[in-house]
Length: 124
Image 1 (tube, one colour):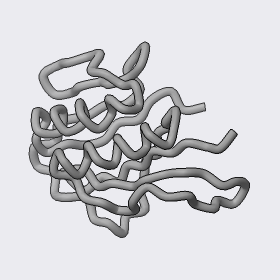
Image 2 (tube, one colour; image 1 turned 135 degrees about the vertical axis):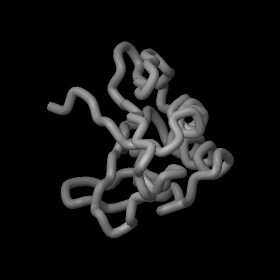
Image 3 (cartoon, helix red, strand yellow; image 1 turned 90 degrees about the horizontal axis):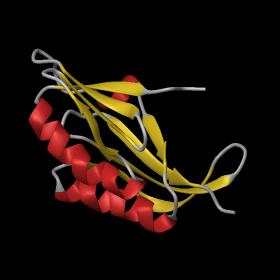
Image 4 (tube, helix red, strand yellow; image 1 turned 180 degrees about the horizontal axis):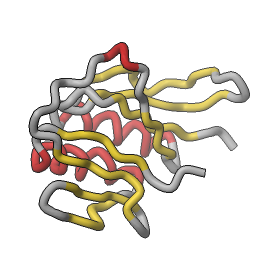
């Protein structure tokens, strides 16, 4: 249903280094680079960083949150650990969780600009 998402970054290179590490456990790599934007994905850019020099940190109460699918619990754990190592903040440690329709294993982080990103895997 959704082809790609874009988030704002106040420092494109800092965010690119952060997401190189954080998205690697999910199978994403840098696939496109331009002066003011970088795209990550598996086969085509699905997750974009867009430079916004005048942006302020994202407020935690905005409700904006992006969830990316992970292949395993280990990938969720690695996503979360990489985010903390790269200067991100924990916003929900890896754990089993109950959603409306199913249980899942997920973790939530905040990137250097405050964007809320989740990695999730579903039991088989």
